[in-house]
Length: 63
Ligand SMILES: [Zn+2]
Image 1: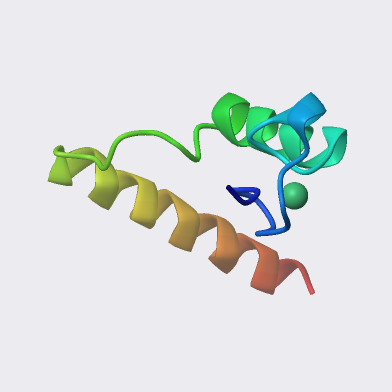
Image 2: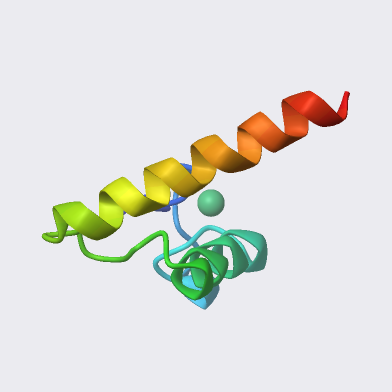
């Protein structure tokens, strides 16, 4: 079995990860919602995309 984060062989101590670091990365993904189920809510996805576009727009004007 290999580490799901970086693909290196997993260590029994940190299974299924290869290191504490990769285990932490995985935990971080959970906490930041990167493992969220694919949205079956097109509206909220659209809103999120619009919000992102607004933020980028704002950033560009700042410079
Ligand atoms: Zn790893």
